[in-house]
Length: 104
Image (tube, rainbow, N blue to C red; front, side, top):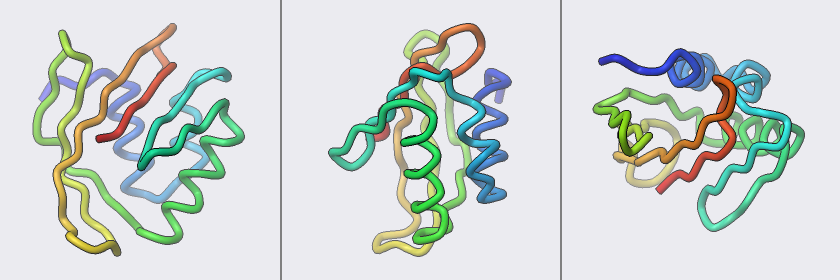
């Protein structure tokens, strides 16, 4: 699968539970929408992913990527009810980094 480098980096960081590397995939002003909550900027994003990594230990297995829709479908496995599940990650990019991420 031909993924943008920043998405490959994000998946690798997630699978290694590396909150700092995950956060480095985002712009300074990025926004993340997940489970009905919104996280603004790198500090909030790092706090969100660090907490999620500790609580859920989720890993991602990419299943498909649409360049035109800028979305990744991935099987996510971890310590949460219903694991594994398939989630869709909708991205907006800016200068090779993620400016917006919506997880549904």
